[in-house]
Length: 246
Image (cartoon, rainbow, N blue to C red; front, side, top):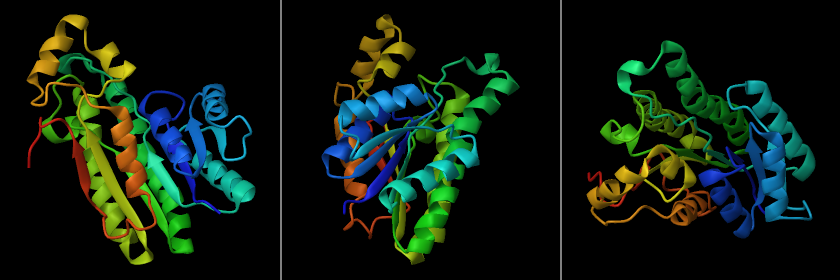
């Protein structure tokens, strides 16, 4: 049987692109999102039969939601191999206008959500002796952010560190943990955050002179979740058009 994957924040945007790519690659996929009806609709769009795609309501801030998803997937398909921590709260509030409550809200979704998911599913993968975790970081976490808020940039930097911590801990159990750090992508969220008058200059500032393709990011994630990808762990895969070189 094919491997089972859960993608958080999969009702729309990059998460939906990733979940669809995994399904197209032959995985059985749970489209998980805090918006349960939207997650179910996205899953039905990918697979009207429901045989290899389901939608789940999942708030990444709540460990019990991950535990419920774990139990449902193991009960339904008897297997669980892949977690993609994609769900994120992306805000572009100016630095000195960010309230402590807003700062905490962004970190609760982006950092705590990644930590909780990796912990709950990591226990399963460790016990079963196999697993793949891919975390969605960002260029903002590497360069301090330019079009996003300080809280978002800080959260994505923390995800880079969590990736290394979980990778080191789980490596002896054939569980890999990697991060993907995209730059600006051609997504509704980017067009929403960047006013039209700033979009042209933003693209001009990218060395390759174009926004990134979400489908390519999804393809990289599919590759990192493959059975033969066991020698890559603790890494951050940069997909930023040359904006950050190292």
